[in-house]
Image 1 (tube, protein in one colour):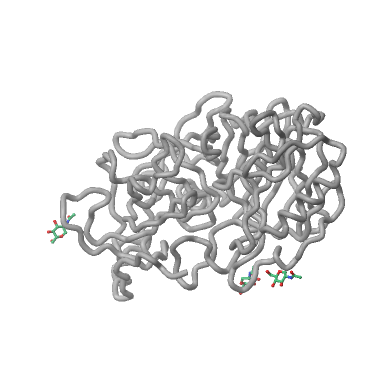
Image 2: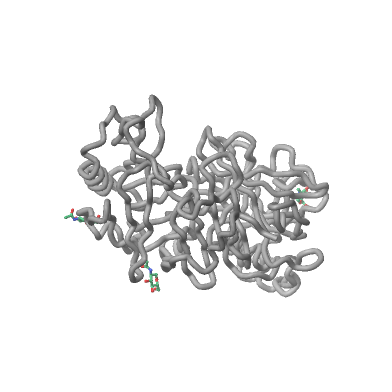
Length: 436
Ligand SMILES: *[C@@H]1O[C@H](CO)[C@@H](O)[C@H](O)[C@H]1NC(C)=O
Ligand SMILES: *[C@@H]1O[C@H](CO)[C@@H](O)[C@H](O)[C@H]1NC(C)=O
Ligand SMILES: *[C@@H]1O[C@H](CO)[C@@H](O)[C@H](O)[C@H]1NC(C)=O
């Protein structure tokens, strides 16, 4: 995909100035914490996951939609952005070069503001829910995040010059009420995981634990034990699979050689009730154009499957549940049951397991009823997979519902995903995460 809104490309001669700006402005105030946390809650109206942090001077709380994709944090700089501490990222700076956007806003006529600056590195913030992107300035400002919030709120850790992209008010359309931007958890250089790791000098990894309700889940950045009440420590009991790099960008706006910053995993087969579902396995591999494969997405509320995979999985699930009375399907789902006729277990409705078989030996992500079934209107209980059409860019998109109350560790340094399967098995939930 070509850059659709290319700004003025920065020139190589500008490298001369790199020397001046090479000093990293990303040092934390006070002692560096070994981990920082962001609380996460689900917005019931949209199924989006929201997080909050403090930004600017004077500091204000900012709410943003959490996104495993995306490139940077972006916030609406047009409406109500007031701060005495923001600074532009000059086109000729090291930060601009590292951001690799190839864009520079040379001049802006008007009063200087975060959205109107001369000689400022440009970016392409994308609303990955609506797939709308625009051009906007790259700037830095103070950003503070908690070092812990349970059992009790801890001190904030502050990055004095956290880089982000200025979005516009129209770009926030389609986001949950109250959200004024999106916080990227992707592998991109200035997405939260890598930038926080650089600011606070901890490992380039984070753990994501989403809840199914408005109770707080968590993203933990850095090095922390994965401790949950009552007395459950998952640090040593995760299964691992490699994180794959899709060599072709999946973003709305990208350069020709950009790799995707999203997280792909190597699903090699899908099983229902332990039996392999017959499907076209080549759809599960990432092809030379970057199509196919399996990625994880927090902006997809439910898992999205390419049409033939969706049909195969739904048929297999129907065959394994022939004894459970069905009801008329509730969109967007195709297979629904009379919820009152489905038994319940510790890990949700008593239905066959769905298994994502992964490329590394013996590692399977086993999905139980709490993560495969969705309560729909009229008491229906539906298999929570959605038909993504016959030629989607990515064949399998693991959505938020399937990840809830599972601990997922994205280790960028070791390029691997650690996963716990359902925490309900261990009689805990993501709401019980404790740090400090
Ligand atoms: C950008 O530079 C021009 C020319 O020096 C000036 O007129 C304009 O006010 C500047 N814009 C901002 C936002 O500082
Ligand atoms: C991406 O490119 C690298 C190096 O060329 C290669 O080793 C890797 O297998 C490619 N990834 C995919 C998913 O094709
Ligand atoms: C399997 O999928 C690949 C990739 O989309 C396609 O080229 C091929 O024709 C499919 N094979 C069958 C038997 O449908």
